[in-house]
Amino acid sequence: MTENSERRVVSVIVVNEASVLSRITDLFSGRGYNITSLTVAPIPESKYSRLTIVTSGSVRVIEQITKQLHKLVPVLKVYEHADLVEKEMALIKFPITESISDITALCQAYNGNIVNVGENIFIAMIADDPKRVDNFLKMIKRYNPKEIVRSGAVALER
Image 1 (cartoon, rainbow, N blue to C red):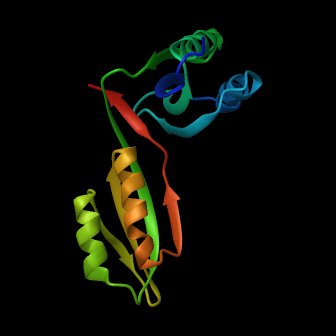
Image 2 (cartoon, rainbow, N blue to C red):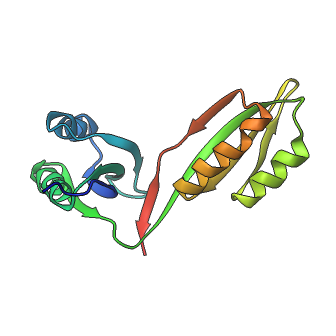
């Protein structure tokens, strides 16, 4: 019997020191687990950082990952999100010849706007649920985006 592989979001609170990120990614790669998205940032006014890791696996695989993460010395807390608020950002560069008003209207439907206008290009930004970001990126293909950058997920439990 094969267990279902599902998308999972795991947060890891670590001491903010050199090589911690490398040790965590080594744990994943050494066991053949893929990281779909990884976001790291310091926690304000502390000596800690929060890693938000998006991966996929069965409940058993995620339990195994979290147990292994707990064994790493600089790790303070590991938890898989059950009820969460999750967001991802995307920056998209368009040729100036595309319809700024049409793209602005689309961006606003996805918690975004035009954030920079240059001589030959303009840049839009959205911040929304990762599935909605996927949907937005499909919708804007007709406007000939020149470049797209995604941030990776960030999440907090409710």
